[in-house]
Image 1 (cartoon, helix red, strand yellow):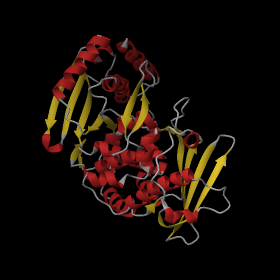
Image 2 (cartoon, rainbow, N blue to C red):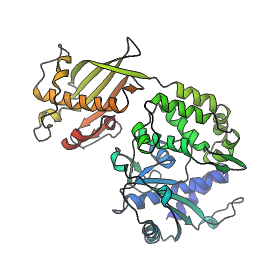
Image 3 (cartoon, one colour):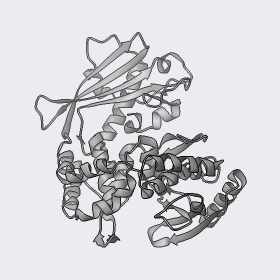
Image 4 (cartoon, rainbow, N blue to C red):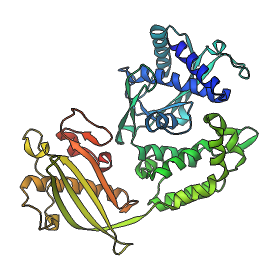
Length: 421
């Protein structure tokens, strides 16, 4: 029973001496799974693309907790019906009455549903006096949503639920967070007025610590255009310089079980922020120098490597590696169609490799076009010297999503390079 699960979590965290604010958000995080299960098992709402802090928390184990749920979609959603369907779902499946309040903001293209669970009287809170736990759900209409590649993450961890979340790849998630970081309007946090949420700063640092590169095309479609990452970095630096340190503790304390962890972060966030921004290595990619082919006979995987020169580092090269299973070469029904060859690059193929077939050159041309398109969209500026795709498979059995990607022929031909990483 859902309420019993919440009570067990409450008792566990209370016994560990966690703050009531943190316990309240922990209860919200459990209920988020049940809301997401409703969304992603529904034929009417499973098209919603999740993003924001909760997506990071569930999919990438973001250290801080998250209390709201954010979606984007290119389809119009009847928000009143969405709220009604959710109320029915919780009543029918968990015998739980919930309240919903809908807020429509046409000027922001965002509809909001406030979901209220009248359950807090069941818990022995001493400082929290209200009786209803509220979760905010934002559904943002973005007509270009489907232009951007999608990723999936498993949901339901720690519950008896099993569902799959539709989301963006991490580069696009970072871009969406950068928009919040750069464009939030002034609001009060405690007694202080600020136009940057400290949680946005925390999340940006989390992305930067991973070396994640923002999707500049997404930023452009959202009205923030940068020619290169360097321009983006400059704008982020200027914004960070305007943040009042006093707002951080007010905003972030409830999102951490371990206050010492937060205090450590607070003590040096600004120099660390600047250090992380400056730590990105930047390479301006020049001409294609060589193409290598390799077969790993232990796995029967084939690798195509493309080596490019760089303009700003004379002895530095940037290498793109594409890894495919042998199925793509052996079975006629999944071999790609002809028409992908790029004749002018074929003399770059390393002479020491085995003689290449026409099909080899089709794959070489296909992936070269993808890499070139990726470079063109990023103004030939990249932030690492080696790119390696997941193993591109033509079968889905025993798939390891962290290391492998399953595609059919049509998807292989259409997919952008960064979707393969």
